[in-house]
Length: 176
Image (cartoon, rainbow, N blue to C red; front, side, top):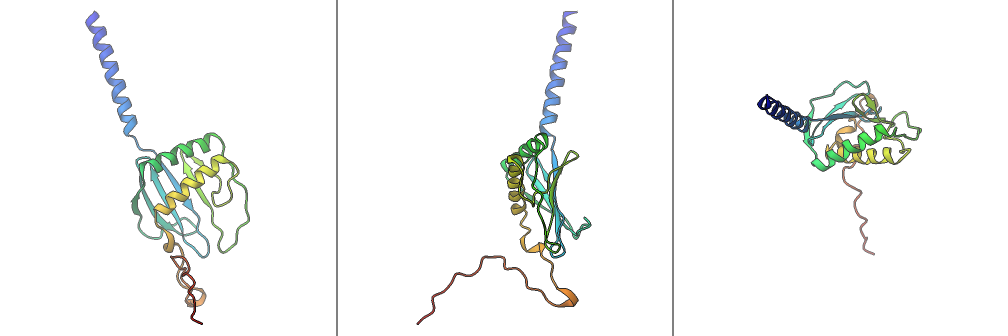
């Protein structure tokens, strides 16, 4: 009888250890969505707790415009993102409504486990939203979207200026 109890306790301990190991290897995921605007493409970034991520451009209706591209984040960035995401959801993070241009206004939100963040393209309403906005800005920078977001071509086929990727050139002294 005593041997059965020892075997059952050992089996229960093994089951608990396996459950913990499985839980530790399970990935969590969230999606960052930027709506885009009349003049810029939107995007969707899927971020996983292990630091893997992918980005795809999309139009204002959320229709994908091309193939997704994988990239990776430092695990500390991913961990901070999911920690701040949980805190923002549990603490009911708020944003401040802001006016947006019809041509250039976008909306950026994070969706996680059925919860959506406030619009992170507007000023944060509290420290929870500010921390989440910082994480999202870091992830967007790691995705290297920059010049891909601006549409090429203007109205009626007229060429449009392409935004300069680097800063303006430094001023030069002119000989007198």
